[in-house]
Amino acid sequence: MKKHLKVLVVVAHPDEAEEYASGTLALLADAGHHVKVLSTTNGDAGHMELGPEDLVRRRVSEAHAAAEIIGLADYEVWDEHDGDMVDTQALRQRMLRAIRQWRTDLIITFTDEGDGHNDNRLAGRLVRNVMGLTTLPNPCRDIPPLEEQPIVLRMIDYGSIEQHRADVAVAVDAVIDRKLRACAAHASQFLEFAPAQRDLLHLVPDAADTAAVDEFIVKHWSEFLETQDAARPALERAYGDAAKDVRFAETFELAPFGRPTTAEEVERILLSRG
Image (cartoon, rainbow, N blue to C red; front, side, top):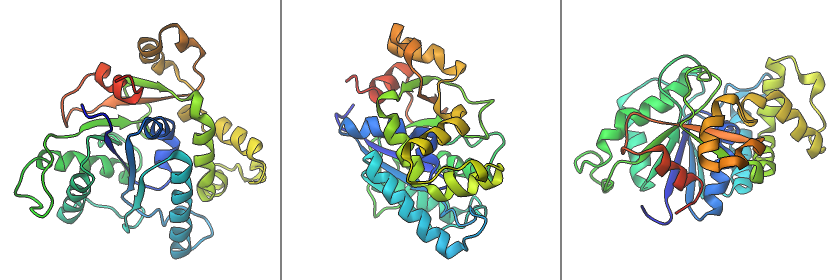
């Protein structure tokens, strides 16, 4: 395994990598790995007041701000409309090219199975559908094939809570301030759109009050921030007795495609244990 890996996080909307995995991404970046987030849509449906063009400009700006906080090497937002994605050959080619151009060693994405947002499932499906082509010379002949398929991990999202398997857990207490700041950078979502959908607008604090904003995000997104019971076995395997003190954790499932791996190997990568 190379000392410094190229990590590609494939989500469907700007802000999802921050919510579900940015603690781990910050730790990977701090360890010298090169981390890129790729959003397959521009998120232009995600607001109650802003029009699509204004919203896209804002969400891309928010993504770049979050990238600075996390320490990402790149944050790419495709121009696909939010909610309109379908599994086309053109999108498969685009995903294949993205994976090969980044020279990807590790992919973190959503499951392509189950319920939830169709865009999220499709982001994972695009990765799955092109995985077998990543090492073949003939597809995308202008981009050299990878030497081996990337390891693929699945992160949780709101539509996969019941089916998600916590094969690996990462304690992110040490970087939780950066995770919360990265989430807060997406104010259009965490302080406006999601609270409007959940009838919480009257509880949203002043954006300038960072402590209150952090508290608001932890309270209302606790199932994706604070350690859940399902994560405890993996945390105990990785951290031993110290696991009992972990308040904030992120979990990952080994995907049934990509380069074969083990939970122990993934732990060594994500926890930077050599």
